[in-house]
Structures are given as C-alpha cells and as structure tokens.
Image (cartoon, rainbow, N blue to C red; front, top):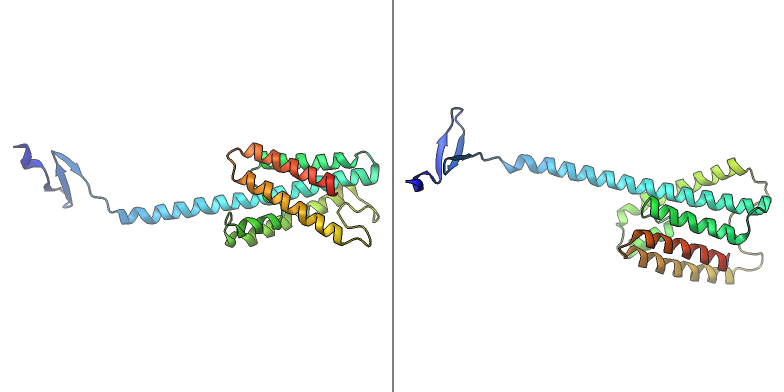
Length: 210
C-alpha cells in the first residue's frame, strides 16, 4: 500500500540515514553550517554599505566646500560673480550632490541632529564627522591651490567687527529652518525633490543672511 512508503527510512550505500517520502529521498542538511556563512555575508554587506556612506559624506563635503570657496573667490578676486550667483552655485551644488551621489549630511551639525533624533546610530557619528572634516580640509587646500588667493581675500564667512549678537541669532534661526527642511525631506519618498528642496533652502538662507 502507498501508506507503507510514507516516513520510511533507508540506509544508503555510504551508511548515511535519509528520509524517504512517497519514494523520494530527502536529505537532511544541518542548518548550523549555513547560519555562520549567512551571518558573515550579512556583516560584509553592512560594512560595505557603511563604507559607501562614508565615501558619499566625504565627497559631498568636499564638493560643497570646494565650489562654495571657488564661487566666493570669483566674486572677491575677479568680480565675475555677484553675490546672488554665489548663493546659486551653493544651492545647485547641494541639490546636485543630494540628487546624484545620494543622502549626505555635509557637516557635523546635521549629523549630530540626525543622531539625536534617532535617524543615525551614535556609533557612526565619529566616523561621519571625521570624513566630513577631512573632505572639507581637502577642499580648502584644493581651493587655495587652484585660485591662489591673497591674504586679504577670505572666502569664508565672518561677522562684521563689533557685531556678534545679531549674526549669532541669524545663524541660529537659519540653522533651525534648514534642519526643519532637511528633516522633512529625509522623511519623504522622493529623494530628488528632497535634494532640490534642501538646495533651494540653503541658497535662499545664504541670500538672506549672507
């Protein structure tokens, strides 16, 4: 009868036990040998993804600081760009990086905020900050090498002499507005629109507060 073949155990020529169900042999493979290999692959994928995140952060910081510095020096040294054009260069750089490279924080303040609100693991924070600073320093060295500015040409931002309270308040307000835009874009489903929105916010805030 067919019922006699269900659950029958047979011994092969090599002496190993196999289960036979309805005439078909089903070899029993131990799962313990597969789990370490799967864990190893998962760890490898996680490390590779984290390295890619760091590369994106470093490149994003480099591109933003480099093109911002070049645009500022083009205005300061040669007068070929107006201040609104400098803000446009910064906005387009941010939008291009976010739409092309992928999600990036650009600076430690954004990274720390993301970690505080649970968008990023605290364990990743030091690595993000290190690659951001490295990319920014390398960008400054590259700007100096390409543009060769004189001492009186400073391409960064600094408060006017004798005025510290108002610039501080403006920076605080601008940072809060920018973080609201970034947090909103991070929760959206369209990364391209989010990148353009963040770039527009950066350019507009730069145009307003300098």
